[in-house]
Length: 142
Length: 142
Image (tube, rainbow over the protein chains, first blue to last red):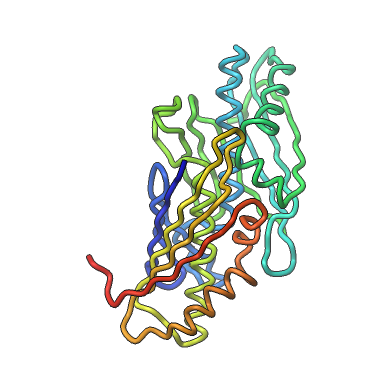
């Protein structure tokens, strides 16, 4: 299967991106010559990873009848110091919220995403060490 | 250097992502259980690649005094058939627009991005074959 995205330069460091499912603006920060009018390109990799594994997990938990009230996924990527700067280490934090959580099923879902389903995780594994932490909480503070 | 993004599940397959420089919604397509209220996660990898190399190139061309009128970057990613589905081949098409383009400098800028500066390209090289095509046109059709 093929997927295509298209980008158009809008001047300075700003680009429009027609990506799958919508449109977004990409820009550099002011410190590096951009104007901050859009998201940074590299961190979209981390966003892609969170979205991919997140969708796996919520659909697996639904199938397993182990639904949770809320789920946060936070991703920290550590960049190399030298060009080309890439994420050599990634910390993935999953926080599952709810009472009487089925922790065995939740951990199984996280594992299935990591090892079997998440294509973005598979790509990350080729260049980064991935550390995964699972946390539980009863209720999300608002 | 560390970079962090945070995502929160909004129900069904929809996630909010606080990424660097802004906020976006991620959702699956209706065919796979989502509602199409946001961008697809995996294709954000391709968007990241286009943005990263695009910013390299426009800033290099500025330094080289070889500016162009317009630049489109189109990316096609070919996914594997089996889970975990990842991009095993990527076609990167650069279309530079302008009269009297300095093609030698443009090609040098594309090469410098690919080989030296673009961290996202470096990551992609670890799992995908990357094919690059450079095209030139006088004027962008509107």
